[in-house]
Length: 425
Image 1 (spheres, rainbow, N blue to C red):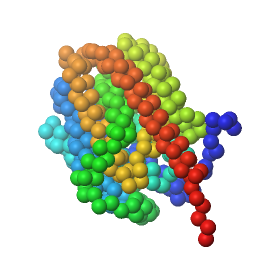
Image 2: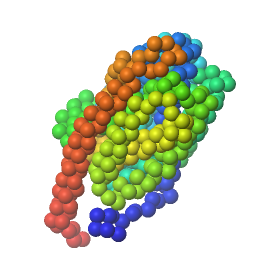
Image 3: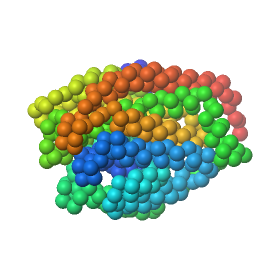
Image 4: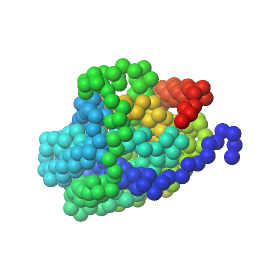
């Protein structure tokens, strides 16, 4: 073990159970959002949608999720986190059910808004639970496992969803998610213990003043900005992934499930490794290296013309490595910023601003990317790539500031503990 490494602290059996339950909730919520990308080409063709209309369908979820996060931020630290998770998860299930029975574009927009109002808050609740139950020395690995929900959704969820969509229509994947999420909800109800430690730190602040108090803190605002910048790139590119692969790279609809499956499988392998590494070495260094890697992959991928399918798969694997290797250390760092009594509000606002930024990015992407007809190649996709590279450079600087603040907090805490007077009974 080098001097820069810290000992690995093992998880307790209950901590493992919590990780599994949270990872499964993340799997369903991520799949519900992620499946819009591979279904994008089917949706645009079946409903005769323009790229701007599909972009609005994606951004409507993000905007409603962002608004919901802001509205619930003031209340997030005033209730048992288990009860909050159960409430919003059942709302998410209801919204997803609406997606599964919709038959028109206005109904689709209404269903996505409903799903976003509830689903957009679940991630922030999960992050608050992680911060409550896991010390900073374990959070890199926890984030690695939770982010595996994205990989699992691509390995299992998206190929199965595309298979169902090809047989029973694009609505069927949402009905599959409803069934799975209902089982997970029951498991959380039975197995998860109440999470109320934050309630012991009493505060007389109202919901509104608690929200304003959280926003007013400079350190928190820097964290909010860093994670908002982090989400811009993904939302800007992701909605057009399947349409670009099919119409520009000439990937067939039968090859598309395999493309998502292989990319997702690679992330399942990478995530735990990155999580473990970020608990042993400097998290910002990992983030910076991954950001540089991602920028190189973006510049190559968005300028591709028809190439062999094996090369498309390889590029997607490399692309996924960069994206996920940024997310794990960045989120592990951000969770260390808020104090115990502010965590719920911080995570809600943080998730909210991420969603709103993503909604703006999806809307902007829909205006930049154009398509002459539903079978022609996407145009100006590389313009999005150049914009993402610029945003990523700014994001590296912002996450560096977060890293410095966390190290300062840890140093201050060590100084306080060093000079603390021991209590003699």
